[in-house]
Length: 467
Picture 1: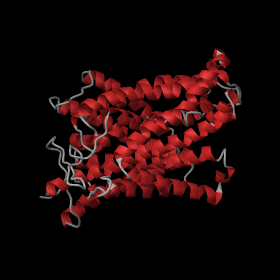
Picture 2: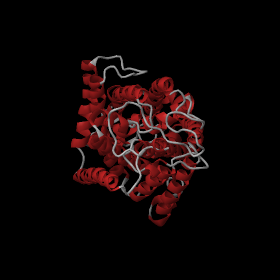
Picture 3: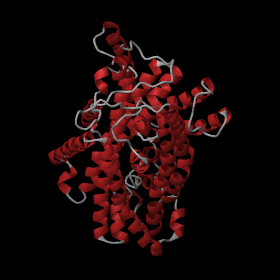
Picture 4: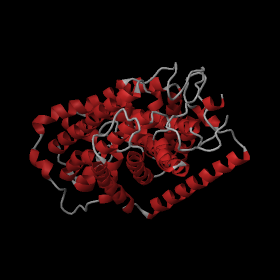
């Protein structure tokens, strides 16, 4: 029987049949993600190392950058991780946040959530090959501009997408290796920097005459510490998600914060340079100043490996989101198809890759701002869904439950919501325009899918449902 329209009645999630006849999403014979690979996938969903945190110093000086990476996790990362832990264990399906919004407010808002999160995700994915090439051009200047740069971005995107196609378990263990190798040079640099640190440098508000760039500062913090909920679209692929998810998120929050703060304290305390030099990629130059040229090369290699990990983790989330949306009837059934060879959601991977390539040649700052704006819209809806589900379904089985009553949860969500509004207010007119057009496209897509169902142009509903 084919579902004609997604409905928010039952808490039982549909699941898709795997290519080998097993069950995807809720269980089955294919190999599941365990704790350690999941921790590193979350780490790469969010951070991937200190690469990209440098503009915070350029924008506001060492003190505010340090305070930002100290305080922001408590007002943003921790609440987002707690919400993800509760709702992913209550609704352990591959749709993740789409399911949460649909269960709270109905199909329309579930579909809009899917649009915002998917587009913000693929825009974010597009930034990683760009970041990777920005580090490589320091060693190979030929990649600075022109055709070589465009070819490098395109080829690297296609190759990394194919790696993702080979399987989530492979991606998970690759993330462990990539995380360790890419972090090692920062551990070396931080240890060598200890005798060179002058603590008074940490108190600097920046050079005189350098105007603070609050737009860049806010977007840098936000971009480096968000996307905790992206892993929710992998919930159906995790072994014992009710137990594994809360543990993995707790470990990942601590791990991620330390990965940002330790090198930032080391470099800002040991190195004194023109504030304008703190652009993306400066950590490699700092490694040469503190240790030597060989460590700079290692940091740059680590940046490439980190970009690969970030790309793989976030492409996995986006592709499984597409499959999860097909499972609950928001997309045609063929979107839930898995590869016969690797059991991966090949339609989701293909769609994500095509859109990623389409936006890969935007300015890196524009990429971050556009992703942040769409993500902010999605997070405001996510906070509202979380609070409404607590009020609407207080007796829903929640294997992990945030230990606060509704008033406490409102306060917990209010603080990051203020920051979300701030991020949106400081956006440029171009970002407003692009985000508005994308949202309008998402609304049009929802009604187009309704038309497809009514005219029976496509088959909808989970693969298992039709069986």
